[in-house]
Length: 484
Image 1 (spheres, rainbow, N blue to C red):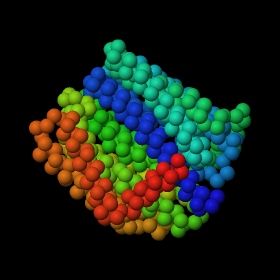
Image 2 (image 1 turned 60 degrees about the vertical axis):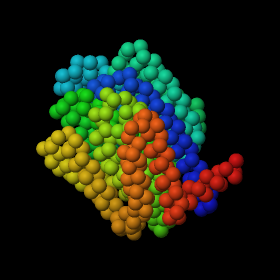
Image 3 (image 1 turned 90 degrees about the vertical axis):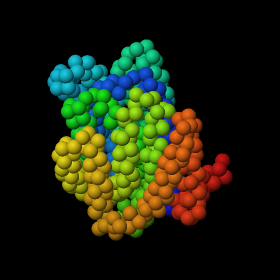
Image 4 (image 1 turned 30 degrees about the horizontal axis):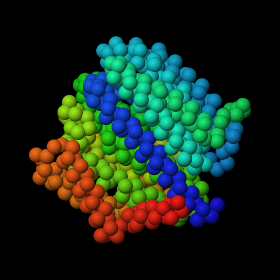
């Protein structure tokens, strides 16, 4: 594949991946708002507790095989089918463990309803196992159009079911139904829209071969998942499910931007990085482009959300959710560092250095334990603020290996991020000032004015200072319109 063809394929992949995340997550965002108005923070906290255990179990099921399938130079039908069947078996084992552990979890949190919720919600492990292989195939072949259509359909179906259940008074079970329906519908839709289907073939040798790469990612992902959810576990136990629901809701909005929009770009760039892994100079150039582009897109949205947090929560969720505003603002700052985190880790994976990936996770988890230990001496808000400081320090950890692997130092990375960060900070201050000046306005009108002001200011400053990422996106949009 020529360089021009690769650029076109990446650009097309980014377009469909952004549509998938933006469209599907946009629908889920609307659904979450509607559910939040019908449910309480405590009910959200109950499901939040269970999703921690489901997420950890899902790490064991997928076991790093998805990344291994994308990274492997010559992955064939035998590889994909073998991994698919192996992950289904793992899902059955993890479901059994959760089924037996359900009474213990319910007793630990002193919420009897958790017993039944765990046993029902854990069903998502089975379609999740298949989906991980389907999405690996999509990433490898860059068939993101099918993923977009499937995710969109699954979001609509599961959202309609959950809203109906909430309206009928099912409470916390509305969110359980949403999760189960989403995973089931997504798996079925992908079978219809993606060209891969599991074949009647299996090779344990192929599984072992990829596990040689994937086990390090499994350990790294397990450490990352457990430690990322430690705060939820402690908040749910030490405080109460209402605070946990508020923390989860406060984290959800910035996470939607940082992980979904940021990783939309990264999901396309991983196979692109992998295909050029022997050309270090080219990979370094692509990594720099990814960090600049991710920062340009995500930072203004995160700092803009920081500026309008209180008005946004009041308009979208209602006054009963204002308790989540401090969490939301802290997590906006925390997720600002994700462009550096994700891009460095993807580059390390693409270079085939899962051993380095695992060592990085061990170092970062040591920092996480220290941060959690210190944070527990303060209030719940102090605990989350210290987590944000720890996330900042971890950018230096993730960037360190690429100084040798790619010749791309952390100082250079921050220099690539700073133009977008500087413009976003100026925009944030101006938007907060506008909010104070129009404090007597109807909240919806004030929010609209603030968002419009932020968009105009950031775009205008990017144009004035001739930001590379601004003109790159502008040219991409123009070429897209011309081809149509």
